Length: 181
Ligand code: 5GP
Image 1: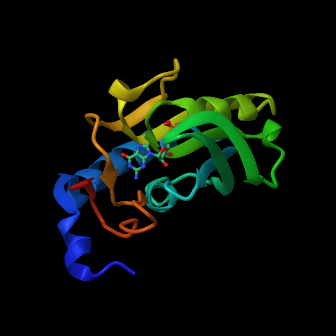
Image 2: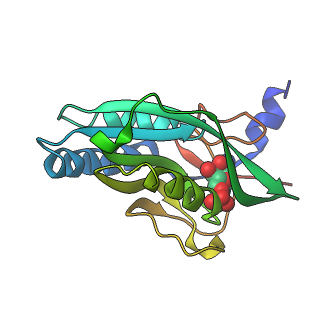
């Protein structure tokens, strides 16, 4: 277990405050509620990083919607995700009856999400879109654009608000830059 002094020393600086996140989520919740009113809506997130974002975003949505989670493992080539995804816990729903929004924590190289999107498309949902909390476009290696990115950030490793480093820091209420030194 990490001691508290080392733990805190790794939190370099706050990049996105709790207040900024709350404001962006409120606006996005309103947009989704307007756009999908009267339509069957399923929010899906791929565990674990997006669990906090999903929990807060869904509470800003004021129309009926269902929520589901998937578990997927990315295969890594060294430290870089290969984009090959193995689903270890799948959805129970037949998504052909839903408008699906994939709720994601961060798009980095884009490899994992472009593979996940392909898997979803092959199941013929009524519509499919991707909403991500964070986007690091400088890091992209495959052609992939989320439909909505609430914050665009530079090429930094970030923690908090669901995002981890060695499984720690997911419970920070803000997004911080990780101090690798
Ligand atoms: P990629 O887009 O490269 O296939 O992988 C995206 C995944 O890498 C994200 O879902 C997330 O788990 C992880 N990731 C990418 N950038 C960061 C980051 O800055 N911080 C953390 N904690 N995870 C990241």
